[in-house]
Image (cartoon, rainbow, N blue to C red):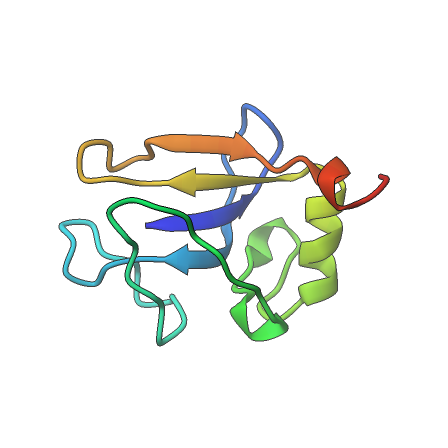
Length: 106
């Protein structure tokens, strides 16, 4: 599985959007994941774009489902990170804070 979380560096947060998952994995995505989620590749690069329909929250942290502007603001403020899970490391093998400077000034 791979997704973007809403959370500062060194803190855990809820999932905002999903890149991919695998319903046949030992740790499949939860039922709240939008239908049509792509299967994660075993290697390579993930590319794509998100719309308001892809934003699932986290409502408990102030981003409700569909709130695309709030999701983008979280990215631009440095309050999001990517988490990539694997069979070897189910809680997460790769985690990295999103650096919004690549997208423009803060």
